[in-house]
Image 1 (tube, rainbow, N blue to C red):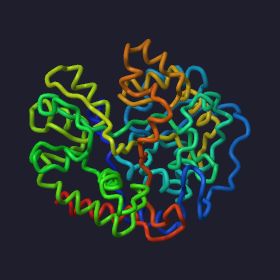
Image 2: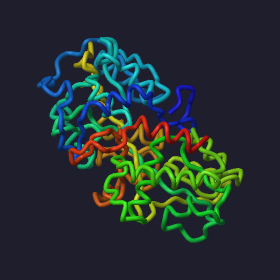
Image 3: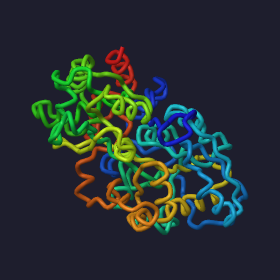
Image 4: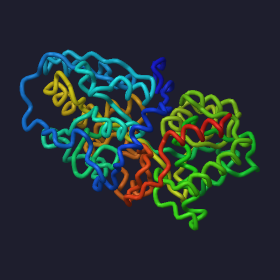
Amino acid sequence: MSSSAGSPAGWVRLGTLAAAAALAVSACGATSGGGGSTLKPPPTADMKPLSAIGAGEGALNLIAWEGYVDPTWKDQFQKDTGCVVNAKYAGSSDEMVTLMANGGGGQWDMVSASGDADLRLIYGGDVRPMNPALIPDFANFQPYFQNPPYNTIGGVHYGISLQWGPNTLLYNKKKFPNAPTSWNVIYDPANKGLVTVPDNPIQIADAALYLSKTQPSLGIKDPYELTQKQFDAAVALLKQQRPLVKKYWALASDEISLFENGDAMVGAAWPYQTNTLVADGKVQVADTIPSEGATGWGDTWMLATNAPHPNCAYLWTKWVSTPKVQAQQAISFGETPVNTKACAEMEALQAGSCAQYHADAPGSYFQSIKFWKTPIATCDDGSTDCIPYAQWQTAWTSITA
């Protein structure tokens, strides 16, 4: 998202990592897998989370994506709890990590971090464990989001999941009367000048996911844990793709304009772009998740290590986890709630929205999505030959130059 964005169309969830921060993560020698394994515990692993929510402290200071603290649900929260919310909107994952330095500096209570920032915050010691037992709706979360590997390490929850979205393949139905079944359409020279993809180093994971299916000899098991050989193959594929790309999009509105103007016919997108384009009817589009699967993102409310208002923070997390607020945020921003009870609320707000945003997807759907997590040097098997994110950033610069 962009700090200058005032609407969902202005969203950009495209973080560029500060090299120093990424290197700090790579040096931790720790990682997670399936919400379970870890080589070294995060610095705050032994901090005991609250066992009960006490009286609110009267204030709550949040670092958030713009619009995540909307009056639609903020005002009632303040009225009910007496916690006056102060929000600072961050323009990127990098900015969030910077603001959260030193455990929030005794100023910030929570951050709505995306999966490409979570491990930096966790292994930087800037966030502390949270107790999901204090969040009644946690039991209604889609199981994957109760302990995703980007916010849960060794069974310890360093935040509570909020919303998510898949990175889909968007296509013009006139150009592609039959839905593409493979991501190969964005690497096919036949589509030169018609392709658009996000301007984000994490896009390397999308190439790696594609290669994991099309070149199994590379042995890619996790698109965020790449050996040098695997990484080089993904980068080479993206460099081959470069002449095909009309524009690397930074904002959702950029991609919408590209499709509306006929400048792009196929590309990586979010459901929001598809729904917006379908609604305005200027161009006939659809999206799909190809046979190779897709990447995706998940956001998490994380509690600062030095949060000055932890009780208000828990009260906020309870509130935004309820079905009604989950649905309000999902409809407002074109993303998907983690609370399975939110579907009925979504339908009440906007008929058909539950299915549009895959909020009713079965568990098998999530097996086709590889959710963002910060690449670090230590692989899930304990080896230390995975490529850390600082190198992803450097490579991305060379790809898009």
